Image (cartoon, rainbow, N blue to C red):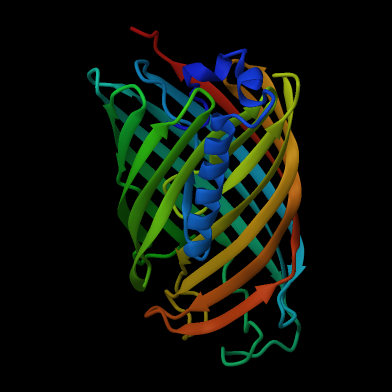
Length: 346
């Protein structure tokens, strides 16, 4: 699914602010509020197990984007006293376009490399069975995503999107299965010139767990000139809702909140209990930043914030819990850059 770089035609309408905010509350504002509330309710009912998507793709152009990002999370400590910090770097690409007047196809891929460095007490136990980690549960992690998708256009305002997300996630050196895959569907509706909303459902397998079903949401609401509320993310569980504000297209302030989850296969160099087991990190990031427009559809994002409600978990190779602890809020900083590319429109 092409996202974030693609621009729907209504985004350039200069009369949006006057239409949305004019005397008494306009019906487009009511629709936007309804869409935002619906998304929040859906996410809450799913206990944070959800996915968010970005912008709709350009309809009759072959377009793509490449992006790279880096994030550092400063030291934090679990409730049991285990300390760690982490960093991640990633590169991604997407490309897609029409095969006829009513069907679009797209393919995306992403690679992320993460590292977690633990600072454990000297007296850490040699095996699991207490609230403390017995050893560094993992170091370097590799995550590879593949995402083929198809969009079916139903008139000018409605589209149906089908996707087959595939993910590999594992500690460097593991030789066991680290793949998860699923199928997802979403219906998008261009409610008005300023509001677009999408709702759908995803089903995906989980490492050493039963498959999970979760809602998928997408929103872009131009509240007024210079103020936009939108979701950003992909077909895998997680994502964020972002508010962009600024009177200039060159620089916009951002504030966002979301959900992140990484579940991955461990290698065979741990204790007997966690050999080829499972690791999992979840957190809720709250961030502020700047989005700097470098050129048309090219952006530099700089963010800082904190990850709250974090949890670290380790399981055996059959999914039995070995360690499960919350950790303190973790400060973070990040930078990302996105460049578009494409072919001329027909």
